[in-house]
Structure formats: C-alpha cells, structure tokens
Image 1 (cartoon, rainbow, N blue to C red):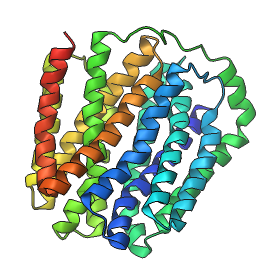
Image 2 (cartoon, rainbow, N blue to C red):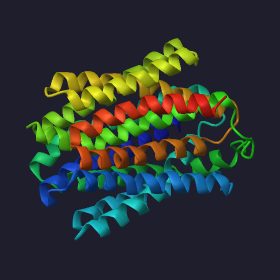
Image 3 (cartoon, helix red, strand yellow):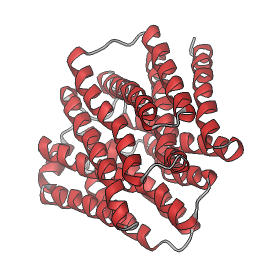
Image 4 (cartoon, rainbow, N blue to C red):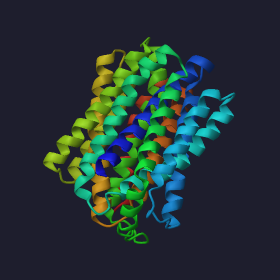
Length: 359
C-alpha cells in the first residue's frame, strides 16, 4: 500500500503545481493581472489551507479514515471548474474551497506514516518529484492552450482518486489501526517552534516565487517554457536535497538556523536584482536547498515527538499565503524587482524576531 500512497502523493502534487504554476501566467495573459492580484490569487487557497488545517487540528478531527481519497475527487472537480471562471471573485472562491480540501488531503496522507516514520524520506521524494514534473510540463502545456493545464491538473487528481477508491477497503483497514494523535494539547518545544519559524520563511519564499516570479520574468522577456524551467530548478534541487539529507541526517543547530535564514534572504534579494536566467537559477538552488532541510526537519521532529502533522502543515500554509501577499503588495507599491529585494531583507528581520520571541 505504501507504493500507492507514494503514487497518489506524486499525482496530487503534480496536479497542484501544474495549476499553481499556470494560474499566474494564465491571469497575466487573459486579464493583464497586476502584482497585487497575483498576490491575492496565491493568498486565497493557501489561507484556507492554513486556517482549516489549524481548525481541524484544534477540533481534534480524527484521521482514522483515508480522507485523502475523497479530497482528491473534489480537488479534481475544482480544477475543472477553474476553466470556466467568469471573474476574479469566482476564481478566488474556488481557490478558497480547494484549500479546504487540501487541508484534509496532506495531513491525511501523512498520517499513513504515523507508525513508520522511517519511510517519510520516500514520501518526501514522491511528492517533491511530483512538484518537479508538474512545474516542468506546465510551461509547455500552457503554450499549447492556456486552459489546458487546468484540465490536466484535474485529470491527475482524478487518477489519484481512482487509485484510492480501488484500494479503499485496504486503506480503511490500515487507518483504523493507526495510533491516535498524541500531545495535541501540549505546547511545542522551543526547538520545534524554531523549526516552525524556519518552515514559515521557506514556504513564504516558495509561495512568493510561484505567484510573483512569472510577472518579473515576463517583464524581463522570458518565455513561458523558460520560466517553468527556471522554477523547476528550485524543485529539482529540493528533490535531490531531500535524498541527500536522508543520507546524512543533519542536526538542527543555531548556526544552521542562521545559515538557512541568510540563504533565503540572499536568494530573494538576488531574484530581484538579477536580469539574466543564470542568476535566477542560482537563487532557486539556494531556496530549494533550504526548504528541503526545513521541511524534512519539521515533519520528522513532529512525528518523532508525537505531535500532529496538521500543526506543521498549518505553519507551511501560513507561509504559502503570506509570501504571495507580502511580495505582491511590495511589488505593487515598489515594483516587482524591489518586492523581492525588500522581502529578502524582511526574512533577516524575522530571524532576529524569532530569536527574541523564543528565548
């Protein structure tokens, strides 16, 4: 059954990033969307994801059921509906609802590993490879027809649902016997809080790049396939760094924490300053490395110490919706290049803030 879980993780992450990468470019080409609109677009789905993941966590919603199967079906339906959006309001509403379904999908599928955390590294490789695949093909699909990525994203999610429903009885039996979530009311330790902060800033940068970099790249004259190739470099790096970190099992320390923050800060500043693809690729290599470290460290510590992964996913969701919103607002006021530069400076400010708050 683990292979089915890996495959469904691959399909849904591919589906998600086929749509997420294509959405900003689609809105730019069809509606000449401004940086602020692109930021709001990235905000809605990720805000719903973060909010409802946390709500389900606090409500102690039991995960002894393969919710990811049902979620896959509704995600497929939402992606199909995106092809007929008549206005921004309808699109924002669909993205918000989609975030709710994802708030059940990822915690549910991660719960599968609650009694065998040693297989988390394979899970990380499966979903992160799906991200690579989704982003890479998006630029080429979008070039054929601007609504085609939404149909393909819908199809991938539906295949995930079919695989799940074909093995529903087996999954139901497995999930009923998984251990109950532990320590749900216990406050996370300081070390885990530091990992949360690091996850937040990493996914802030990833979310901002996914929704605002296409605008910057189009201003620089990059083609759609080139944009997808550059962003793919971020996720390829993250994929290989997941494997690398699984082999060396790095320890968490204050020095590594500072290096991670500094890496993200430099990467975002370089993104705003760069005018050629090679420096943008370098920026995304840095972010891919840092995000692989923080995500792996976060999910391992959460499961090993008996906390719910929903809390970790909620933090990630906050980063994913905060990134497009902050960089989108800064870009609207200061220009998209400066939006990235000042967000990079903000990252270092967050580092010193968390040092003050987490004494």
